[in-house]
Amino acid sequence: MAQSVSGQADGGRKEAPLTEPAPVRDPRRFVPHAYEERAVDLGEVAMNYAETGSSANPPLLLIPGQTESWWGYEKAMPLLAKDFHVFAVDLRGQGRSTWTPGRYTLDNMGNDLVRFIATVIKRPVITSGCSSGGLLSAWLSAFAMPGQLRGAVYEDPPFFASETSPLVGQSIKQSIGPLFRLNSVYLGDQWRVGDWEGLRRAAASDPSPLLRMLSFPSEPPQNLKEYDPEWGRAFWEGTVARSCPHETLLAQVKVPVLLTHHARVVNPENGNLLGAMSDIQAAKVRELVGAAGVPIEYASLPDAAHAMHFADPERFARVVSGWAKRLPAAPAI
Image: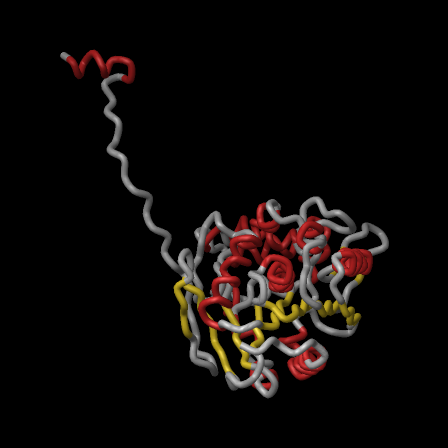
């Protein structure tokens, strides 16, 4: 009778036993590369990386952009190895490094790199990051442990233009954001949806001019196969920098900076940005870093591709090496 009384309100229905959610199937597929890949346990993540060059040279940490694995630097690495001991990493959620659903923020990714420098490189380092990796190179130049950095290269970073409510200039809604939105819908976090053909069709008819300009191959390129699309959703929704607004970061930079600014066009009809950041946004970066009392060198390269290190590795190596040679020498250990 006890069961009949308790079951009357729901027609005698019994609750199904609770079960653990099914684990996410890792869809990644990898291909071999020219350099040996290694992994280091940083606590929350296992970070994948490659290295080359003599340990007698000063260390250089290469930080890839969004959707890019370490091997985006593969052609630049032997050129840089003439002057540096080179380390190139996969950020969390990219390449062979751990995917961390719900945990893609500048602060978390920056702290991964602090741990990497402390446990693997173990010397004062120059950092160079492209695109979102440029934001993280900047994060390190502000928030790394004392003595970890000698200088930082920001390779065409999307300052302000990758925020939802920027201090100045275009927001992510007026730049690359629509692509991240479609990735979120048609690929899904951790590729749970995986509708590549649907993404291609949607991009072809999307009102965003940027999406209609992009070429989508018949199957996902290798770099996307190694990427968690939740990364892009974190940018589109603004959670990636919610605890770290760009102006807050830039006001606390502590080491010399090289800012490279590549091809960019602002549509005069709607103000949309094709490129990582506008001239107004680049000027604000220089203003804020300069106000922090730190030297910042600005290289306007309007003929350079966004990922110059990939499209023109020789030029990238010349720019980085030339600037690094003008830095003060690293303190003796």
